[in-house]
Image (cartoon, rainbow, N blue to C red; front, side, top):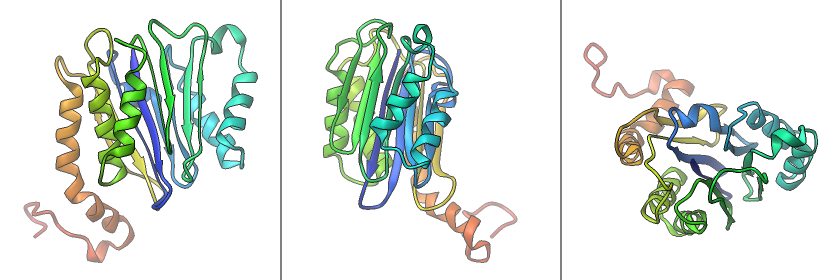
Length: 226
């Protein structure tokens, strides 16, 4: 199973993915962002190559709908039928594809600058609940994505337990400013991801400063770097 949200904040240009699954290291295979281009999730019997391929089409100027339609059309039908793909661009346009052989109970929902999808779900409305929570949450995009993921889990999430989770966000620099992963947890990987975000958020901008203006970078109290 995978439950994911991809979302954008058109006011800031932030784009990101929040994702959880019963399989290990879900974010390593399924979450993709490219600053100024878009955020993509590729899931359900995953082909990680599809994420960069979809981002390449978005970077070339295709809309999410056109990019996804073209990518699906060039895949072998017997393979693409197993995939779920979602995409969002920084201006909030979204697209989604769920193949006929996506596993178990499948759900999807496109909201305002957010799209959520899942398979092997406890109920088909889990993505709708997750997307709605993301839309109404406050704070930076990462916090809103986590609010959506938390709501999806609270609504039943997967029919069975999840074991990995990830959060990936890009904004006004060329790299992902947030890239947090719980690759395996026996219990509550989404709770562990929330804790990672709480630890990371106060230092996020400091690490961007370290890259752009190292002379002005905070030390974070590391011994020997006061």
